[in-house]
Length: 406
Ligand code: FEO
Image 1 (tube, protein in one colour):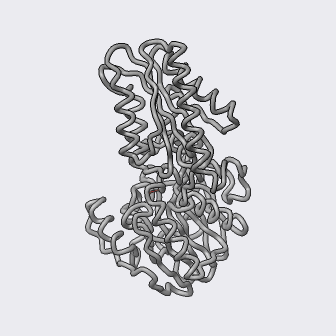
Image 2 (cartoon, rainbow, N blue to C red):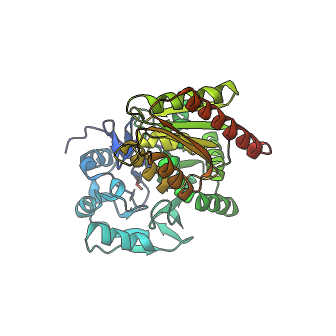
Image 3 (cartoon, rainbow, N blue to C red):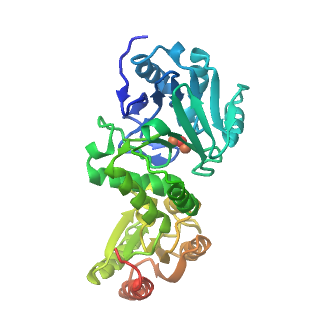
């Protein structure tokens, strides 16, 4: 096979041999507007080891990059940190071509690989905290169950002080730069936050424990190599840990998010008057009209907010469908420490607002109040929105007066 693309050396023994996906725009329901990468790594020494693979369609790119360093038959072992198909989808092809001495995965990884891919390959389980020597290199393994699948684990290469963190500390960002410190920092912060909000948020309490465990173990890597996006090194690692620490806490902030859709513009006017009132009070307010905002960008705005106001017209005795989509998605991601309110216009039955209230309460959002406008909105309806914004403002200020505000 021609070597159309080559490996990138990232440390003494390690090369990036992943695939660049500039074109993906939908990653199982997540809007990947900047593309992504499927990172795989080749560790070279007396024994050569492949860490993870790539999405199946990208196997030629993986092979080309590996072959720019060593022939495939010179690889001795494969370590699988995560069974999801964006990292293990090409595993059977690579096993067939490499015929490795051994394949390693966590105990749950062994099970997941067999169940997910319906193949019966011999995979060696590694224990949490165990260490193995492969040639002249030492690997330690740490289970990271439910971060974000039951099989997920970290592999640590002692000689290079390098942590292969699979999805953790990743982001969907295709870029010519391989290291975080070479990228635009505002893009990195946004994409890392978006990844956290859309993939890791439900497991925030487990991430807190993992960060504590890393500290107790004295794990202080010089390089953190995730399975998506650029690689963290040097001072950028402390930034990553500090961002994760903040995001896992999900402290209530003074950021307000107004989400709505509209049929004939009435619910939009209500959203505008709510947003206007918050802005007059000096709060940071983000308005998300669902005709133009993807669900994955909605959760990215909610997860670090303090208040969320959700508006829907009533359509056929129900919520507007875009709201149902976004709220189903957001509910599963379990944002915490939010207060909220509902609003919406209706013609004759007006079920949307009470349905919004129920959904928000089911999500654990502390419900402050609501406004319904029959057609309109009339002056009274707009006054209701302004009064509702006042109520939300008062509760938000009270609840955040002892913590940091946005
Ligand atoms: Fe990037 Fe959970 O797979």
